[in-house]
Image (cartoon, rainbow, N blue to C red):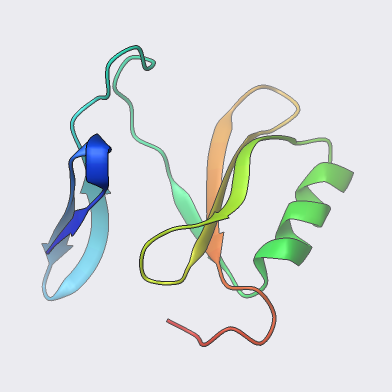
Length: 95
């Protein structure tokens, strides 16, 4: 499947055995070098963001809504490793 990300272009999903295992898109101008970002699904994005901050993470982006109703955040742990979370707010429909 492909998700139209407007001016950023298409977000192409990668599937294996009928299960979505990743996605990729072209690098936008003036962005960091290409890399993989690992997303961990959480049941409550707001609680996960608070827990990450309490654990010393720096939230670099989000939480913000993405097409499809999920919310994402991108952060770095206390050692600087990047991570991303995806989930709903409490009361949001599960995906």
